[in-house]
Image (cartoon, rainbow, N blue to C red; front, side, top):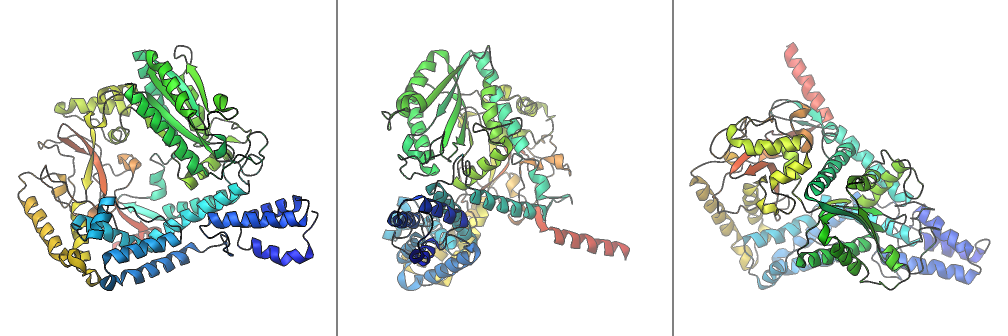
Length: 634
């Protein structure tokens, strides 16, 4: 059809209203390729109905606007509406209000905060205890929070735009590889805003040292160079361990059935077998298949270790690369198990046996197993050291698009399989040599971590097959136990919550809980680091001796690399008895929130994060410095 019929122009404009320009152009391209006016118009109707379904609307709903939506305005509107709903709790009750909020979120295709079935049952029976009630009220607090709505709506908007782009085949090697151009542009704009925020926000510790969050972020694993170096060191450590133990290595590539792929790999044309699945559906299939594989291997007492990398095909469909180490006598059983489960779904389709699982056996005496993984790590982080990707595109440009793909769909790119945890490794690398002779076993592990010897570190921590609960050193977390009581007191004093048997007794129950906690704290015979208003200058063991470490350096080398403990100064937590599990909360007062403070081994606590940080904008810092200068002049 060479052009749009004059009688169809106005109708066509209405059908395409609200779509981003790339989507409108794609639909018009299809429209003009069809031979007859009837077929062209029917294709527009069919596509618009599918877009309406993606938007969570009825297929006959007219407005499918996803262009130029003001997320801030919509978030404020939703939050205000939810505030109106919660003000009716006194007359309608807690359960009715909760159901109304759930229905409201469902109307806008927003996944509500999850509550366990036990809490929901107790809510229906009006038998909630204080902790369960706090979690229900946390759902209310989320619904009334503009920030929560803004985060949800922004993610929803990104997913919808990218899903529509895949529907129109705008994500392929011929159009926008890995992610659509519009999504890449949106994320790059958001990253730019985030970078400006980091550069204009400064963190200052109790010693007066100040640095921007942008500078601090360059010192941790969010820096692509540091992230890549750490992954390579851990992979090399596994390989060294495998060589010493005489363990075999294998490199596996898992992909999905044809129905998950939007377009063909060679031509980029639409795949007629595509079922409408998104990358999230494909990732769920891979997770589900791998879970079955691991369960079967566990029954056969096979425990492989290694790494998994998730990366996209050209159309955004994920596939996995796995570098696994396993004893030679178990290698074939492992491969056979993978083959069985990878062909369990649609295993009889054409090309399934050749493409669904690819196996490469690695001879560690002749080649490096880490070399197999290095290419995939690099091209999924920054593209450094690689000229082109698998589709002939510039590797550095492709790395940016892969990052957008992972951020948009929320897909975890790298995952360690088996082995010991990396958190302790990072914390040990923050501290100076430990000079206390009684802590030699910790110092030996610290030296292994500091020298990037993942093999020795793994061995000293208990080995690759050691359970996390049995490892030599564990992360030390601080529970914000007092914040929940403050939140409960505030909530209990809210007059609109005074309804139902549970709510009537809520104030007294909360006060009793606070009194019981305070009594338990007063009966403590020894105080840990959490009982002090200000953190000690040096980390103290449980026995009272001091472990040497560099936590008080005021420069960037003092361990700022692993993050900033913001808000610590506002919380003066007290210690609890050994058998007491403190209540933990987040900003909504309902979920567990802990802060990593250091490491602990056989009762010995070493605090690696001793600084108290406050955040301020660049203008506030400059104003403070200017005022200080005036005082000095006077």
